[in-house]
Image (tube, rainbow, N blue to C red; front, side, top):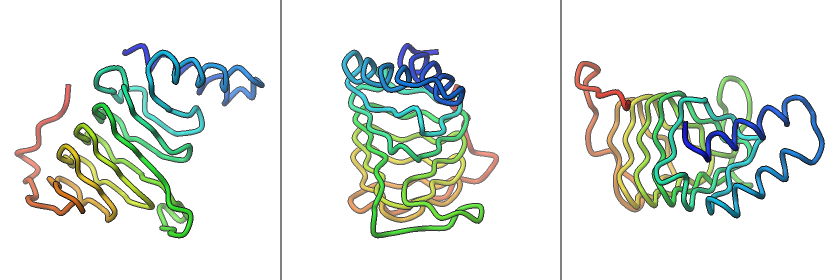
Length: 157
């Protein structure tokens, strides 16, 4: 597990145990040491990996990131106050990332978007619409260029 994920896990555990101040201090240390903003309130699976120790990554406080995902440097998971979506019966305004997703360097996911399991998003893409399961999306704005068959999916290790 990378150093940034260790710091996140520590701050998340402290937050869930309702320890005051320490989660915020740990988040500030992460910002200083790793130049990333990964809040303890976001729900990130322990198996998620951040490329280059999360350099330049900004995560919305309410984002969810599924297991086995790989997020490269410079990625922004940002919300949109004016747009809302519905996921599992609840309203949301920030990205929700599925399992085994690859998000390339410099990608911006903005607003209430859902990225399906096994999706891949190419470097520099700006995602403002949902990305389907097993899809490859690229461009500004991001468009799906290919859907991969289940038997062709390569799991990130």
